[in-house]
Length: 185
Image (cartoon, rainbow, N blue to C red; front, side, top):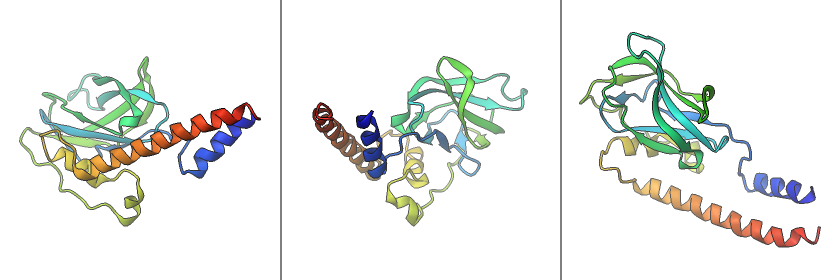
């Protein structure tokens, strides 16, 4: 019992959210997708740790039912490149992050957004606000990946990923050290 309280205290002290609920950050109203193209799905949060991704539209003349885009996606990925295929260009689309075993159990829902016709331009890139530069996900990092179909990550995405790895590796080492101390408690 003492060990779990100490571990939670350490994680909170390090600024790591223990119960970060999922929120969809892209697409959104001002960041649309393009049909038959590579688009970015991005999210924040880590709870639950895995989910399925569905595309929805309230207009059944546009999309008659939910369209599965991924069966299992891991929250630690933070973004995924998605090609929605030959979807009808229209507004009113939303992304649903759901329980992989029960798609009616919705963990998070995106803002309503538009899917534009093949060949349309992506939205202009926006600079990250000064407050977002402190380590949280920003629109500029993921917008960079949507503007290129090469699939390679931008330098900021690469450094962001490696710093997450360094933090994770440090946590694993710290937890291993604390595990040795748990016998003393």
